[in-house]
Length: 131
Image (tube, rainbow, N blue to C red; front, side, top):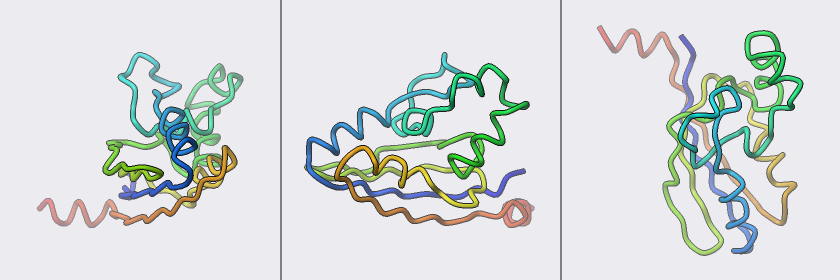
């Protein structure tokens, strides 16, 4: 059972760049392309290379995601929580990130700034509260 983290990411900057980020963030899992697009998809921001996808998740994808996204499985339960001119706020869950390099990678796309807060939910705490 993973240790889930609740994430809140605020992206802000010139309105045209924020709109471009919003469009780029929309996408689906490279492992399940038939899924409905997610409003905040890590594969859309930092794509898994074709050779890693060809090798498969178990063989290469898991390690690649942990190294480049800082978590496995990408962003789950993502929502665009707030939006106004030059600003977006996303909320999403991730499975146990060690670090979160995606905001640094995506910031290379233009003059955007971001801030991210993470609240960790430990698996043992969830099990204990379920009793």
